[in-house]
Image 1 (cartoon, rainbow, N blue to C red):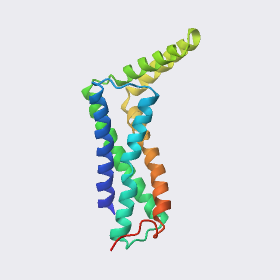
Image 2 (cartoon, rainbow, N blue to C red):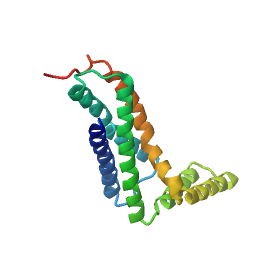
Image 3 (cartoon, rainbow, N blue to C red):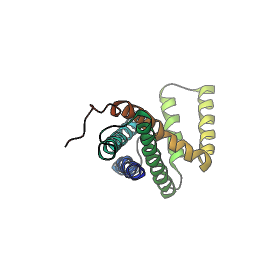
Image 4 (cartoon, one colour):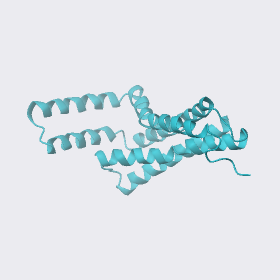
Amino acid sequence: MINTIFLFGTMAGLIVISAIIAVIVASSGQPEMGQHSELLGYTIMLVALSMIFFGVKSYRDRELGGVIRFLPAFMMGIGISVVAGIIYVMVWEVYMAYTHYTFMDGYAASYIAHQKAAGVSGAALDKVVAEMEHLKVQYADPLFRLPMTFMEIFPVGFLISLLSAAVLRRSNVLPARG
């Protein structure tokens, strides 16, 4: 089980990181930071974390003779999610170091610009600017940044783990061949 968790977790982590790096490279290192980028990021995570389903199915079919209970399937999915999340965080930290930790400056500037474009001004805009400055200070702390980065990907893995366990506990769903 551990080998399957590490194999499929590593594949999920590498898929998500490869796709995100491709987006960063395609955007000349300055990806757009609006709602579309969040949608793209979570879509990439969803596709990459489909490895949870394939990992649980592989283990069910190859090691357990085509039958797995909900809890072992769910725990295996969580394990795959944790491995993928750790890889995601590690590579993000390498990217942050490579770019001299400037991500949050660009994110804050983009968010403030979007708020201005939406018509926010005066005291409300001052509040937004103050919130972004506070977030920049928090994000500079690795004890804040690392768990925050992990929590970008882990909830997606948690949901896919639940769905995969619920579906694959039924042995008549995508039964093993041969």
